[in-house]
Length: 333
Image (cartoon, rainbow, N blue to C red):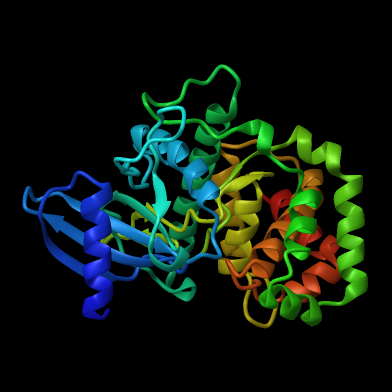
């Protein structure tokens, strides 16, 4: 990081946050979505600055903040978002603020842990991940419930602004970004048309099963401590509504499928058994979850927020294959 950028970031931190004097400011790696910096203040408080590029939505980050706060309050391994001095028009605190060159500032308490390659994860590690995802989804569902109360002083996402998966994907495809054009050229047009048709057909299913989705579960976003416990989950830049099991599909594709497409059955069963011990999910629901996952992954790729998962083109052409594989793995538990 050059001195000019460091000076600009320091100035913005001083302008927008009540942190006091910063003694240490160094770049670190946390996830893949944002440039990350570790901060240590004169009062020995530690923070992590996530500097999200312009491709990400400030609204998604703002919506993620109350959920992260609620999860952290419940003891879940996620860092607490730090409110800036800015306030919204209603007087509520703001957690995502404008950074240099269209970027987005998002500050949390320290995000501990280190990344581990997918190949280094044991079945026991994946069982722990399944439990954490189940816990996360249960807490998110409580947050979405009409009678759930947000943490004091933390704004709740506006559910009236939630779009159906088909509407979100169409909006992304029509955004006209150069990245979007490249992604569309990589994928068969007929498969994309079928996906949009399936999204329209399953709209009521999505509405009935809607919940909050992290959207960025990967070996890079799940950080482990020295004892291989999950220390923190980062990469909240594509947080949205959807079918929560989309996060499980992300985990399945990232950890349980070899590069040649062969499924690691023992790893998949460790992940699913742990998850399903906390969350009820029928085998016949995987198809709608896969369709919603395809739409979310494609939309994120078109907007330049995430790369398409390995093997995505094949999944898009035949989503029944992935949903059938998940159903079979679940049936063997």
